[in-house]
Each structure stands twice: as C-alpha cells, then as structure tokens.
Image (cartoon, rainbow over all chains, first blue to last red; front, side, top):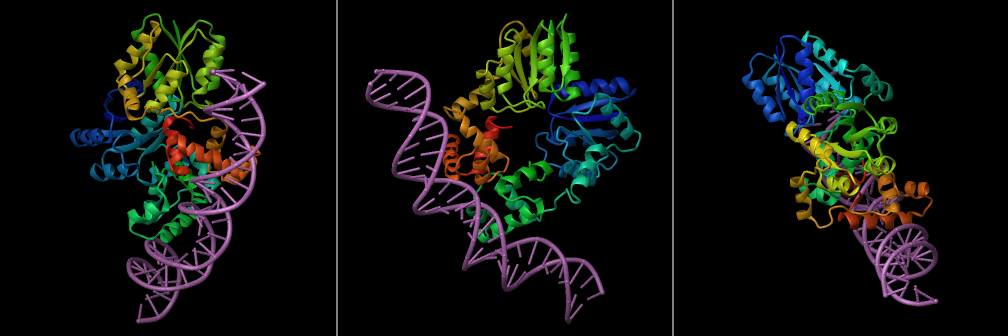
Length: 205
Length: 205
DNA sequence: ATTCAAATACAACTTAAGTCATATATGGTA
DNA sequence: TACCATATATGACTTAAGTTGTATTTGAAT
C-alpha cells in the first residue's frame, strides 16, 4: 500500500508519514516536495494508491494539476491537503475529480481517518466548510471567461489598464469592460476587492 | 527544558514535537494553535524556555506579537517559524528581538539544529535568504507611519478612499496624501502594487 | 528659544478607473 | 436557416484615484 506526500514542508511530511505508517499497517509513504517530483513518483511507482498533494507546492500551476495527474494516472487517487479552507476551492477540488480535501488545520485524527476512508475507496470532503458556501451564495465558484482571467491576472500584478491593454493588444476601453464584468461576477465594486475575492476563491495564486 | 509550538497545523506540530523530544533529551514540548493560546502558556508555564511561533497563526496581529510577548515574558525566547521566506520579514523578525527565524521549507536537520542553537543561548537566521535583501535594496524594510498603516490596511481590504476617510475621520484629500506617501515609500505607482508590496514585506497579513 | 525634519491635514487639479450603450463574431438550438 | 445567448471589442461619459502645493503640529536637535 504505497502513498505519496507532496508538500514543501519537511516536518509536516515527517508528522504525516510517521502517523500514517504507524496507524495503517502495511503502508509505505513516499515523499516529495514539488509538483515535478510528484509526477516523477507517479510515473515510476506503478502501484501507488494515493497521492496527498499540497496545492501550494512549488511548480504547481494550481488546481489544473489534479486534472493532469488524474488523466495520466487514473488509478492513483488524489487528495488535496491545504492550509486554505475556502469553500470555493474545496468545491473546485471536488469538481476536478479529487478523492478528498483535507484542511491542514484539521485534528490529526480527522486527517488519518480521511486518508483511511479514501484508501478504502470512498471520499472525504469537509462538508461543514463546504455548506457555508452553498448557503452564502448559490454560485460561490465564479466562472470567468478566458479573457477575463487574462485581465484579472494582469490586474492582480498591479498593472494599469493601459499596460494590460497593450500586453493583450486590445483597447483600454475593452479592458475596462472586462473589469466591470469581473466585478459583477465576483460581486465587488473595485479592483482591490476583486483581487481579494479572486485570491479567496483560488482563481489566482 | 520546556518548549512551546504555536501553529495551527496539527501534523506540523506533531512532526516537530516528536523530532525535538527525540533529539533533545529532557525536552518537553507543549502545543497550541493560536496566539491567544500561546500567551496563556507563556503566562502559566513559568519555566518555558523557547516559543516557536508561526506568525500566521489565527488571532496574531502580525509581527507586533513578538514585541508584546518579549515585553511581558522577557525570559522566554521567541523563534518564528514561517512558510513565508521574504527577506524583509526575516529582517523585521530580527528587529523585533526574536532569537531566530526558521523557514518551514528548511531541511529537518536545519530545523532541529536551529532549535538547539537557540536553546544554547545563540540565534539562528538564514543569512543566505537575508543577504538577498541587503543586496537588492538598501532599505527593503519600509517604515510607514502609524497613520499610513491605518490607511494601508483599509486600502488592502478594498475600501474606497471615501470609506477610509469616514472611518478615520479625516478628509478624502488627506487619505490621498497618505496613499501617495505610501507609494513613494514602497516605490510603487498604484494601490494594487502597494498592497502586493506590503504583503511581501509583511506589513499587512 | 528657535530651528528643522517629519507627521498629519486639506483642497485644487490631472489622470486613471469604472459605467454604459452599442456592435460584431461565435456556437449552440429550435 | 433563423434565433439567441455569450464572449469579445470599442468609445463617450462619470466618478474615483493619484499629484501637487500649502499649512499646522509635534518632538528632537541646536
């Protein structure tokens, strides 16, 4: 029963590895610290059952990594471990096909149990955190068009509308329209709020 | 030899606690998960030698916590453990009087050794990361006035200048002046860049 | 006591941000 | 095909952001 932990914090890996190997007999825990290493392990270790991924690990392009990994190695389950507990992100992780989402701040028992549940073929998502989202807003997971995402990312870097327009080869007016649309989608009223909301929802890093 | 770990990630605490208690004989490691808990332990456990703090723990108002803790309990050493490795933050932690700064992504051996060095009465700061700062800019640690910080925090929440002015009971014009001064201090040209720079430097959460 | 630098405050002015009406291309659907 | 929703694009217009000159206060240095 091989597992993989991908996290850039050595002591977190140490704690989780020790706990899993002790609690789950016959388990072997591999470690890596970035997305590149995770893919290498997945390629090499054919009998890998489960990969526990910190979505903030270096070299990881966000949630799309889950999709990529599952597509290439469909028999390896993916479970995200994250310090971010935003319901929108949890929903997104769920949508991408992961088997679970474990907040790092969970009690240790919860973490072990969640791993066991997933190894047993089921799933684990913290529904208490998730429900907050569905109650609060019907579509907490905002969907932005590709162009809107381009603009949003540039905006988050602190670029002025003129710069964004030049880089994307569109007019300043068009940039502004996209920004207004982004505001509506995220239900905010200025670019600072938009960037904060987008960060919360995991739309941008 | 009592130590305290303040971190909201249970498994990180587990790994660090186990490692320290194993490597450092006669050590006893206490755990808490927020700033409030840390202060309670410091008050109660009079023979506490060292507190390892994650500066992002809940209820922590940033770096000022170090100063507060050292003032109240001057015989308890403070060492910051953080996922953020920004040189400016390291410098700031140093300035506040902490005995060390340990990046969470350090090799486990580095972390243990650093703890032992500090327990032995010395200090540990990752100079390789720190030097990058002094080479890059002479005053990487920007100093803002209290009023500028008030404005900056409000700004980072996405408030408009009018809102900020009302909340601080000053005119919109004054708010704008403070913002221009902040821009100059952080060497940026708009509020988005200012907020990004301030986050990088640990001026705001 | 006075000088000076720094912090705080205000307002007129310029520039950029944000809104709105409008237009075209694209892709799915009756 | 014709229809409709959506993504994209533009420019005129309004509002907010950012700049600059100026004034008052405070504390430290002379």
